[in-house]
Amino acid sequence: MSAPSAGPAILVEGLTKSFGEVRALRGIDLTVPRGTVLGVLGPNGAGKTTAVRILTTLLLPDGGRALVEGYDVVRQAAAVRRTIGLSGQSAAIQEELTGRENLEIVGRLYHLSWSQARPRAAELLEQFGLSDAANRAAKTYSGGMQRRLDLAASLVGRPKVLFLDEPTTGLDPRSRLGMWDIIRSLVAGGTTLLLTTQYLDEADELADEIVVIDHGLVIAAGTSEELKGRVGGDVLEFTVPDRNRVTDAAEAIARIGEGEPHVDKETGVINVGVGARGSEALVEGVRSLDSAGVQTQGLALRRPSLDDVFLALTGHAAEEDGEPGGGKRGRRRGKRSGGSDAANEVSS
Amino acid sequence: MTAVAPTAAAGVPITPSGPSLLTRAHWAVTDTLTITRRNLLVWMRVPAYIMFTVIQPVMFVLLFRYVFGGAIAVPGVKGGYVNFLLPGIIAQTAAFATFGTAIALAQELQKGVIDRLKSMPMARSAVLAGRLVADTIRMFITIVIVVGVGYAVGFRFENGVGLAIAMIVLATVFGLAICCISAYTGLAIGDEESVQAFGLVWLFPLTFLSSAFVPIASMPGWLQAFANNQPVTYVINVMRSMALGGPIAADLWKSIAWLAGIFIVFAPLAVRAYKRAN
Image (cartoon, rainbow over the protein chains, first blue to last red):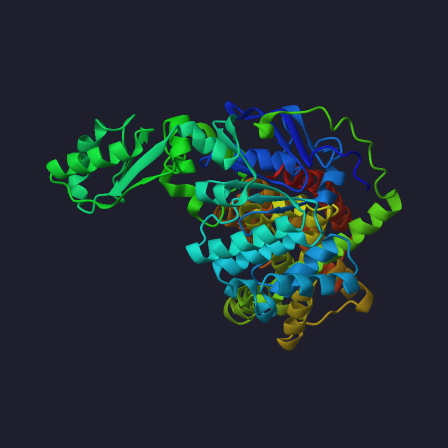
């Protein structure tokens, strides 16, 4: 099972996939060099999960090709499965079983003998801070612990390439940070990682390279810094505590920005790109808001975030799009992620 | 922009020789046993599953033995209604046990467990095979318990040990056949609640509109036409003859033909539904 070439860990060319009328992937190209982290960023339904399902041999593509560690995901699926690990939304965990039993069973399914599977399970439980809970049923675990156990399960076979499909979706902020630490330590160990996320800060934090996917197409790629450069300047941002005055504030600020201000009515956060006119725009903004009589909090000039990038690239914010009723925040997508996910995937 | 620039540098990889046929056959067996073990462990951990597979059938035995039994006449049956009842209730129990098969597979599909298992280098057949093996073991345990409870309330095998064992084997094979149908419905429907509702729609009539609980002669004529000619009745008639004595051969051939037909149709359907499930 020696790796057949010294090429990239993941190579994807012109990958397409449709579900009936719905074109989930419309020709995606990706290259992930060994030992690096690619963040695949996009709103829920952009095609991220479809791409991961094809790369992990769960779904056949309609066109294009995809190689993982040099193995073709269609013609050499069995070899691909021996080199990858997949972790997503706690799906590998049998809640009635203990953490230890879960990992031992996965070890057996990776064809370890019992005398190999037991120490491997213990080692991973230790590594992921689950030793104390090892003999408790997984259903008693917190969301963060379950996610760690799931990730541990994906590592039992010592994969060269790891796919993490939205590893922190639905986790509380503290568990998210814990997950990030774990992911960083895996990468430090040399694992190639493809990470999908709807969270821009997550990609910013973990990925060497980022591709932004929307409606089944790669719409941008580069490092976090390169993408931020696309926004073309600084962002003026503030919060309006009185939600009734949000619209007034947006009007007051509109003329100093380079584009339309982006308003989040729920949180009262307003931001607007101000290009290279940074400090000048800051002063103007303060004056303008003051004369409109709007109180603000945390008014500041900042470097653009990936949120701003997404807004600039697609004209809509990443997290408001394609998430009817906040659907995917739950534990698990509905049945047949292939079909119904795909239906979501382009519905936006 | 390095991330989008595809290169042809990877070239076409050499096909890995992969494990030998013998190794893969060995893995198919060990993976099936691993999945079986996992399913049985889960079963033992959930009180509701134990309730469903053990206590409910026992309650059925007691209900029919002591509540309805007195009102049901079974002329010519040696040992009376309790002897008539037991083979029927065992077949019904085996059939109903397959609710668990359908529900578990639908749950695993819904939660993405099957997806995850498919991304591992394990034998792909093992998920379905392990489910069927575990559920058959579970069903067998239930049958043995029902026989035990039957003995406590007056049931006796009247036809020797060999045919008593044959009856239990037939009941288990029958249960496995129904298991294939349930596995198919669970995977094809893929939604726990719908699977449960659909299970009632076909399993209830099939088991109750048979010779399981009452002599078919006591049913209205139009119903007799159905009850007399459906597989559950054939199987129960054979089981009853094996337990109590009576003609076996005729209904045995019909039973075998039906069960073989069910396996031939539904085992491939279940496999296809499993392969397509995602």
